[in-house]
Length: 102
Image (cartoon, rainbow, N blue to C red; front, side, top):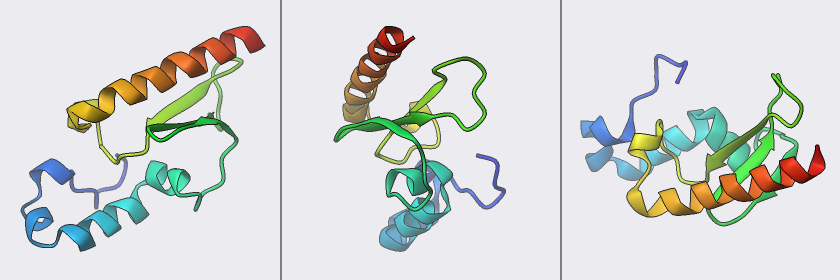
């Protein structure tokens, strides 16, 4: 993440002791989490219980879409194993929609 204040969840000693407060901090400081909860507006193309997809604000190509998990993770490696299939199913669904729309 671009912020020097970001502390990855998996490596923070603070997280285990103050998990609720730390999770609240992450959810409110993470740009993508703020999009997921609707605090930052986005042009949503798709959403389900696992993921949210929206148009990129600076597209590099027609249909440039960002698909993110609803569960906060700084990287795909940090995303819990049980959350990965839902995210990639959303990516596949969105890709099919974009392909049909272009």
